[in-house]
Length: 302
Image 1 (cartoon, helix red, strand yellow):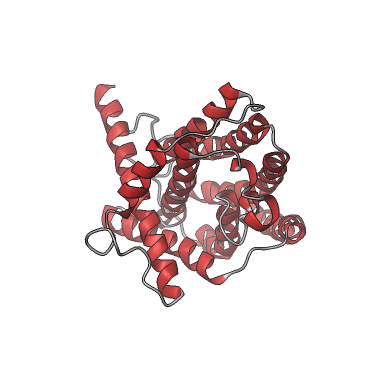
Image 2 (cartoon, one colour; image 1 turned 90 degrees about the vertical axis):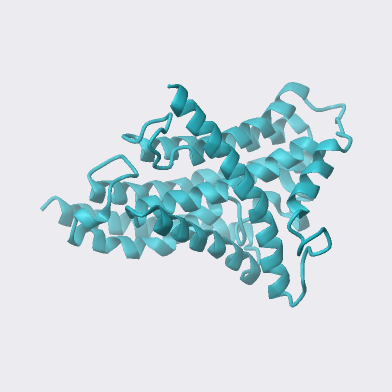
């Protein structure tokens, strides 16, 4: 138990460090797509920039809205970060505190709880802008979880396991349908992590920053950290679920490619209109995934 706890703490710290420098990579990546340099003033090519940002956010004055519900207002950012770190700790590990036998359904269950952090933050802020962002977050997350669950169900049936340590190499033709699900899965995890072009939960031009409008300093930093930690966790989960490998180096490379894809999409695509976002899920992704699942299960059990 002690070794499992230490492994969890070490993994959480490693993920937080990775998340910090992932923000720097994103700013550099977006800068070069815009033909500029990005952060390069602090020391060596801007490497201490994440540390400077963290220090600035955590030592600055915290604005406390008088009309907000103080207890859930401050619990919500901590809950968001805790859930994001919990997702990271479900990845295959020798001393995982959660165990590996049911890691896939545990991941789905914890990911579905993320909406409650946004709900608590928006409701407790007692702001109309925050409430609108919360409503958007709930509708978007719940909608795209349907498609994510169907894709995950087909993958787990193919694996004949609820663990992320299994591999498609043990199966033949059932795994051939998985490439058809990859585009839908990628779009779904972009929506689940509130990333471009599905970043309507925090649409600055429509909602004045969305559900986190009343947050500043440390609590805002926690929400920011939770978002980027969720991106890393979702990339790791995708690598483990759809293309597992015995080599940890290959697993890390696949995760790196997927996190780069998040940045590439942000640099390329504009934000969608909200009605088009919901139409895409209910009128496009859902019929396609339902049709594929019916064909898949009919062939699989024959």
